[in-house]
Image (cartoon, rainbow, N blue to C red; front, side, top):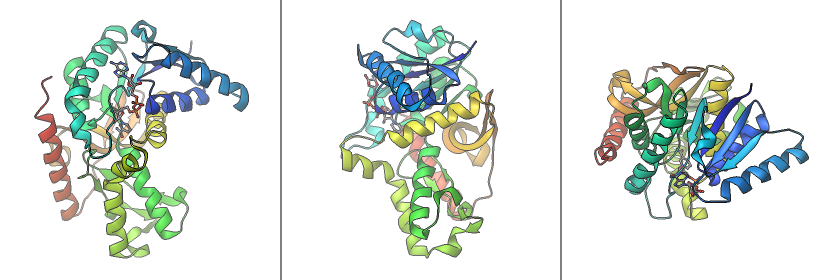
Length: 307
Ligand code: NAD
């Protein structure tokens, strides 16, 4: 029997993840939303795209949470997005209610699932999902680092005139403007970034990465969805296909990176059990301090949660 992956929230990000997973065709995909017709319509459209592109997905759209019953993986993309002038943190109280409600439904219907949170403000919403579910930290975590790293990698490739396929990069920390692109770990074809680009150019790339979400919100009036949807799908791949990839994800830290009791973006090994290992890197003093500052910013948002 094929396994079931549910995407909650059939908006831009959820539908993109559903589309990519449906095309991968290794699991049944359920797309749910509260807006009647939206998940059904998008699922139908994605199914019909299979006829053009040559895959045979099994995707169902529904507004009935019962449809997700027995899912082994659930991705939560339900919630408001920011508009120009808003920070992700401005979404906290509205999205806290939504993520709480969704998590309760997931726990009731898919008690053995692994839960991947995408809704913003991401780090705080992971706390909501963990607190409401009561699940082990290995089964509740978030998507942000793959997206932030994709942005950093893209800028590195453009700046150095290289293929993005040869860029190895990493962004740590909270999913906010204080995220930490790790310059000391960035390489192109194995060559350290600092050998390939001037410090001012690196500083510009770091700044553009940290504000990368805002750049897109200012252009489009709403937040990005193609790269975020692909990033969420990549996490599902690593778990469901037993790939055990090391990917930057938002994980609950208990002392790692000198941070305790907080969800933050760090490299983790993702496999069938969820987070199988948190990978600790040697950071420069400057990067360590930046990570602590980012943790401080996340703690402030977590502090206003009521869940
Ligand atoms: P969107 O507005 O296109 O879609 C959100 C969907 O959630 C809507 O269709 C809405 O009806 C649905 N929804 C609201 N309440 C719901 C509920 N209780 N149950 C089920 N569905 C519900 O927004 P989007 O672009 O898809 O973004 C979704 C969320 O993901 C936002 O909070 C956004 O900020 C966040 N996001 C996070 C990242 C990240 O890196 N972590 C990246 C992109 C987007």
